[in-house]
Length: 335
Image 1 (cartoon, rainbow, N blue to C red):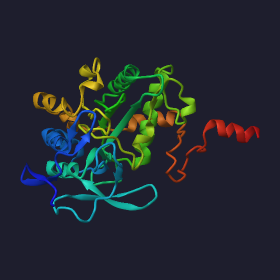
Image 2: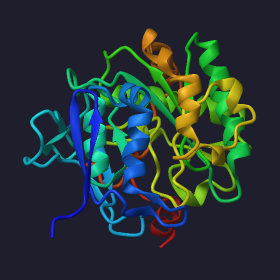
Image 3: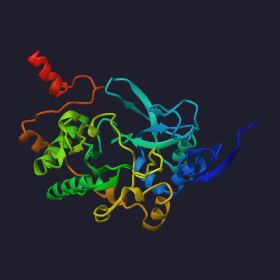
Image 4: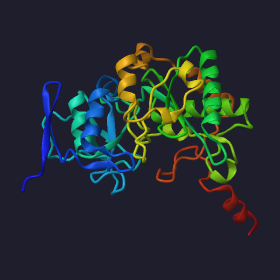
């Protein structure tokens, strides 16, 4: 017997949604139909966040309690209007990743069980030069959203001193992401260096609260500033992306004024559509101006141009320090 389905008009397309009543979030009863309809309801916002960007998918075809498929390559069998862009990974291998140009593509991927959308910080027209600098503010054990928010406002203070406008959003958990549109003149290595310079300055100003330590054993009860989110093939959940957690939270764009007393638990798959209908995309202005990262690169040089460890799946990078956690390094030295 054929599976039940519904046909959902999305712009000029019709997206077929199979098994629309399958429950994807059991704790709150959210179905596949609601997931797809959510993405259509915030379509202009998430389209802005994903437009023309190579994007990875976190798929849960049987709901969030089932198997996760982290999909970097789009299958050959897909509608002809679902676009792709070629990206190159740190290993040198390449892939055809989703490249969104219309809301129907987002709805199609949600029909495939995609909960989270994770875009690269580049456009398909130039996949080697990022046009976005990302600040990932990640609370560690012993810290929470209160501390994360405090660190976010230090980031804002530094950006303001540089004459730069950053755009904050909740991560969908206890974290905060801040994005800045930059001129696409620098490669991933240099943009990452700019990110390192920025987070070092944050750490310098609030060392009791923030840390750039890559190794968890060195972080303590401080908020981690993940500079490696500016490296090649490192992605963050898109603005308006649902997260694969029991209450279906959303990575929600906010204004700085809202962030001052925001509660990330207020942004979920059932509350954000009404917010979007009322306010529209509060990050719509992000594309109005792109900034130079030269001031941050000057800070990187000022700090001795000292690099920091890359993620473990990366090949050894030029100038990178020894990639071994400090306790093991000490054991090797004393042993």
